[in-house]
Each structure stands twice: as structure tokens, then as C-alpha cells.
Length: 570
Image 1 (cartoon, rainbow, N blue to C red):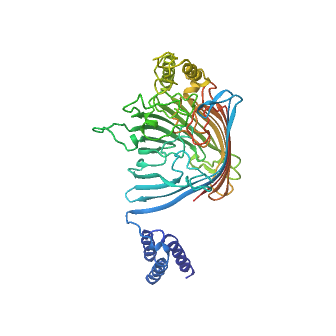
Image 2 (image 1 turned 90 degrees about the vertical axis):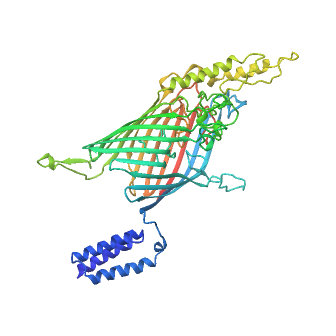
Image 3 (image 1 turned 60 degrees about the vertical axis):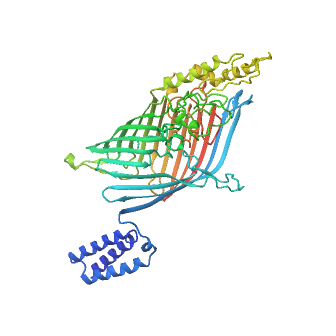
């Protein structure tokens, strides 16, 4: 009898836990009770009593008032909240143009420092339908900047102090998918990046939009995987009009990714993983490519809006030099990037050993004492069209410089705007550049970073990017620690500048440096992280261009970052 009472309690507990989730669970519990009746564990009367009690209890809960479609198999709510203190500091050498202004020259060098208290909130819901279909929706804060989601406390708006202009939530994931087979998954919409990659190439806040096809199969100790992505990089004119009749015709821009990789498992604690990915683009030419890059050397940061100011229409030289080193940095012309991420994971410590007894088939692995998970990781990226990218930059500068002569009426070429007061040289009726105009323009051409573009860019480090590091520990439960140390270098012409990480290296190219981070789980789901980074230019002759919404200086010589995070995952 005691056994039956215990079983009754167990059944009641299971029903109490699972029935409020969805009505479908009630059907599952009913089937379980009936199975226990068949096995003689419960009598018919006991089964009826359990079901009646559970139905009465469920009717009094809030969950009973939630009605879900029969098409929903299960549903899960999740999210994370991160609080952060951050300090960023960038210094520039003396005698360079500052903040995109040709009239403000720092003779002794200058710096820009930001100290901010910030937060990021992401909330989502995902689930499964029947017949192997799935879905998901997620929202994140700060919709005005896709590579962050961070909101700065006290950020001003028209209402005065304690502003909340960045606090709006916007959908950053909306997708439907299908597990076509046990090995093949198809996904459409805007979703988490399905590629095996790192923040060397992809900011983890970015969610590609379009379609992805994934294959994953295990052959013995080897897992083979492949992913193909067709992403809508940017819709033309913001509305995707193509082949318009009787109007302006803009082209949509697409990004394509193809990845092949494998994971070889030596044992339960040790594996090696590696992949190769190739990224290409289409639709990077607008109907007016000669005017789509106007004011590359404007005096204010680039605003990514409307077709002629968007990455899709920068089919022009990736120059990024003074007096506005961060202006033309979004161009995606001449980009065909090969990426090779990899890692080797294992455990060390006296708690990892194997015990064999007789037949090798009976070999068992046991863990006693402590064991430390270790991961050695790396990533390498190379732009196979880097030569063309830098040649176009040189050509644009050289062509514009050839037009910088007295009486010339030209205002430049390929978007490089020359000063032309149109006042002539004082002779009646003469127009064109004055000697003063020519001298002002020549000062720009003589600047350090423009000369750097002309004299460099062919080197391997300018055309490639790499990351190498080590991580020890893991964050799975209360009390866990994780430490990470890595070096990263991003060449001037190496990768897509619109995708790289903004949290650590300011979303800038031509920077290299070290990052160290220590994280600790205070309780399940609550983690603190301390992170420090230092960086300097890969090529001292070139600027460090960025359209990041953090530090705006574009010729950083010394960069420091400190972040203190507290993250709650739910």
C-alpha cells in the first residue's frame, strides 16, 4: 500500500509540474495513468481520483486561461539581461586631422575617452510544431545599432535627463525552420548565425536574414557538417525595388556563405574542430555608381541610410583616410573572403584518466578529483580580392590629385571631393581652382594616412586577419570559472567592415592587440565578467577606420578597453 501511495504522489507531482505548461501535457499524463492501470499499479478508481483532482487543480491556475493552438508542440521563453560598466580610450598622434574636421589639427596628439554604465536586454520565445517544424521570435534593445544592443544609462533625449531613447525593443530574430531529415535543417527569416565562426569576422549580435541550409552527420568519431547561406545583405532604397518601370532602379545586395567542416572526437573529453567558409557578394553596383560615393572625405561620420549612403552602394574605393578616416569604411566592393576557424578542446588534471580491464572493448573512462576544460582556438581570414580593393583606392587618390591644378573646375573623382572656391586667380572672367584651393587640397593629399594608402596595402597583414588564443574553464553551474586570453589582428583590406565585432576592438580595421577576460558563475544563470583589451595599428601608415557609434576617432594609435559585466540568463 505504501508503494502505491508513493507512486500516486509521484504521478500527482508529475501532473502538477507538466500539466500547466500546455493542455497537450494533460493528455500525456492521462496516458501515463492509464498505463499504470494496465500494469496493475493503480486501480481504476485511483486513476479516476488522480485525474479528477488534477483537473480541478489545473482549472484554478493562471495557465488554464492560456489557450494555444493545437499546432504548437511546445513553447519556451528565454532571454538575458546584461549590466555593464565600460571604459574606452583611444589616442592619436600629433599633427593629424581630428574627428573628420580638416580645420582641427592636434599638434601634440589627442585622445577620446568614454566611461559609461550600460545594459542590454534580449527576450525571446521559440518552440516546435509537429512534423519536425520549428520557429522563433526574439527582441533586443537599441534597434538603432545592430552590432551592440547596448543602452547607455542616462542617454539624453528630448525629454531631458534619464533618457530612454535607446531603450526601445525591436525584433532581431524572426524565423521558421524544418528538420527535413535527421541530418538536414532548413531555416528562413532572420535567425542566429548558423555558421561556425568567431568575432574576428562576425559580431555575435548580428543575425543574418534570408535562408540557410545545414547538413550534419556523424561517421564513427567524425562529425561532418556543411552550411550554405543566402542572405539579404541590404534591401535597395530600403524597400527592395528591383527592375522598376519608369522610375529609379536600385539593386538588392546579397551575401553568400558556403561552409564545410568537421569535428573529430578522440574521446569524451577531447576533440578537434575545423571549417572553411567562403563569403561573396552580389548587387553591389547601383544605377549611378559614379555618384554613390559622394563626399568620401566629408567632415561628419557616415550615416547609413537611403541607398546612396549604404554599404550596398559603396562600390567605390575603400580608402578611409584623412580628413575623415572613418567615412568611407563600409564599402563591400572587392570582397571575397576565405575564413578558417578551428579549435582543440581537452581536459587536464588528475581527474581525467582511463582504466582498462582485460578486453579493450571493456575500457572505461572515470573521473575522480578535479579536471579543467581547456580550449585552444584560432581563426584566419583572407580577402582574395584585396589587391583589387587597394588598387581602386590608389587609383581614386591619384586621379583626384591629377585634377588638383590651378584653374581646374573638377571637384574630384570617385567621391573624393576637392576644394574649389570657383574664384579663379584674380583675373577677370577666370574660374576654377585658385592657388589657395590647390594648396589646401595638396595638404590633404600629403597627409600621413592618404600617403599610407598610396604606399601600402599590398602586404599580407593588410589583406588578412587572424585570431589565436586559449580558454580554460567552463560556465555551466554555480561556482564555475572561465578565463580567456587571445591575440587578434585585422588587416585594413581583410574583412567586411560591417560585420566585425564592435564590443571589443571598436569595429575598426587595421587594429591588432590582446584581450584577456575572467568570468565567474555566482549562481546558476548569473555570471560576472571582467575584460581588458589593448590594441594598436597593424600598419602604422594607415588609419583605423570605423563607423562604430562608440569612439569616433579614425586614426587610433593606442586603444584601451575595460568592461565589467553582470549577466543574467533566464
